[in-house]
Length: 128
Image (cartoon, rainbow, N blue to C red; front, side, top):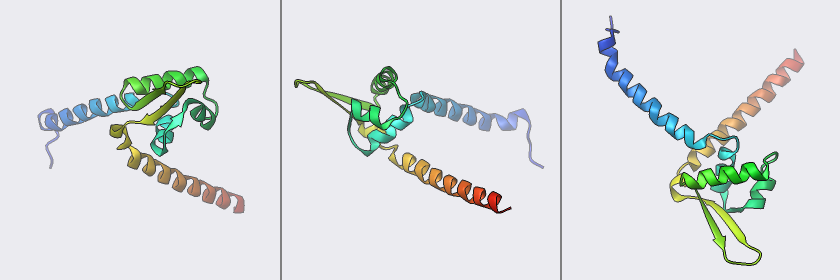
């Protein structure tokens, strides 16, 4: 029978605690109602502020500005201001954050499969 004493679980518990702390820190970078959506859009291509605002229904100018500033401060988004009149500002995902693209693609696939399953369940419920 396996030994589940506190001593035998301690190394595993330490790893779990350490992993939990690391993933919490990572999740903290995404904390914010719009950050994941902003990052997904920027992983597709560079956007200007108003393009992002139009692409994200319900986001206010204030909230979009705040979320972009936080993402820029965290090194996840790069903001480029061009010295033109009128001013032109572009936002793009950093190379390091671009490594999240496979994660976004996996979420997209999961979402499609989930939606298809829900539609199938709704059809089954209607037929019953």
